[in-house]
Image 1 (cartoon, rainbow, N blue to C red):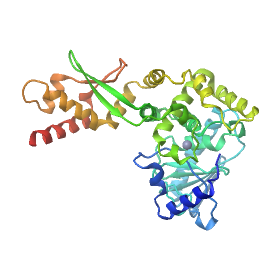
Image 2 (spheres, protein in one colour):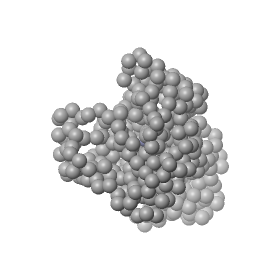
Image 3 (cartoon, helix red, strand yellow):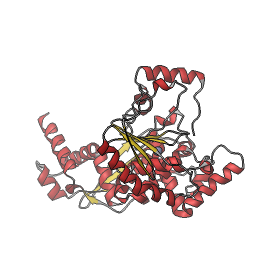
Image 4 (cartoon, rainbow, N blue to C red):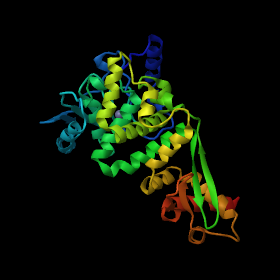
Length: 372
Ligand SMILES: [Zn+2]
């Protein structure tokens, strides 16, 4: 699904791209995403990145790379995963992929997706993957490739969520990282998240604030909309939360049925309110959304969230240490105070003393404060 940019937007995008700033313009400040939201432009084929030199064929598609060993390795992954992705999803296209493995995923010569591990080129059977892409990226992109027309009314944010969901189901080791990242994004969409740090007998709070995004607006967002791309992390968080809850309640076929109904009614996309309702997320009540986010976070996700926000948590720990009696060093603090972290409103917690980067950040901040 690609909406051609308007003439004015097209000119602006070309100008930005010429300055090699477009990917940064769209994704400033974000960590690398599993999948770029590719905007196709009307440009000549001379602008396209060259095809990798080596091609290896397989029963499940072709893999191209500059090194034979790289292509051969990916063919093994493809042969293992393609049938599993196809069998999991209803309503798939009868198509085999052509996969380009590149150092940096690149479609146009002047637009390297250095912020993403891969992308699918809409309207083709081509997938671009980073040579050192994170586990689960291939499975994510195969979902984009395989979805047939019946899914065309699925908003882009929820399609991303569906791709994440399938990749997590087929590569369970990626689950905690993906869930933590999406829980973080969805929380930031709601204006931020608050950690509770429990000590013996008292609790402090570490709050991470963000400009809120309307969750229903995020659900309705389209990949060709640069405004939504600038809040990519938040949009993906909301999309994953909704996709996961709908599939938990109604299965992949239930999600497909919503798309099919919207299509029969002549709608461009499943309404955001319909998706929220199917996910048991009443619109306009933030606490319902926050409860849903907390449900996706258990100890493995919490450890990753702690590391993602280690600086903010360490700053709160230093403030808390200052409230304790006597000078207190890192080993002393974690042994005596035994701080535990949880999301505010949740009960499951983890010991912060087990996280070496948190201890190191604490000690670094404490020394800086002592030297002032
Ligand atoms: Zn994607």
